Length: 266
Image (cartoon, rainbow, N blue to C red):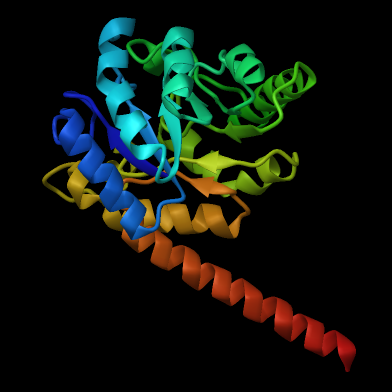
């Protein structure tokens, strides 16, 4: 999943694709680089971000979705039912739902739904980063959401642990380390670590955190780790290197299966 932020204030690339023409051009670049899905968002959900009203969010995302939908599967990154409904009319077939509340829209429209774990709102979520067992609590919450949505008619349900959403660096690393426990639930898992602040802290030197544009190594490492642990989708800003990593991981897995099968025949 490649990211197109049609926003002036996203933490990584805010302002770069804030016009429809630039956002569409970037989306086309991501398709050419190998993105299977392009995720279009018109409201930043970075920690501390201010909300955007519905009309403005629709103004940002709808022209981009309309242009990209005939060329690739498009998801819309939103927390608002009205924006989700308008995006579906424009051609989106997947709701990337940071609020984990839009399953009724997905059920009514027959589109896919990603339930992401977050506490609070983007402006307040860092105050809710308290857990007794972050992995168990996130897993139980997401499974309950997924089961309810599937039971109410959503045919395509994904779960996302919400790396960086109401979680500190230790929480993020614990979720990554035990990602297999989420995969074991049987629900397809989406992981989004790309350029996030905990990677900047881990990669930073004596001068402070690495800037978002300098977090490729950590973004790629965590995406590759997620894929090896069974994640079904990774959400990234840097599509080309992640596609290369996915191909290498896939080739390695295929050769391992072939070797194991051959050994079993002897």
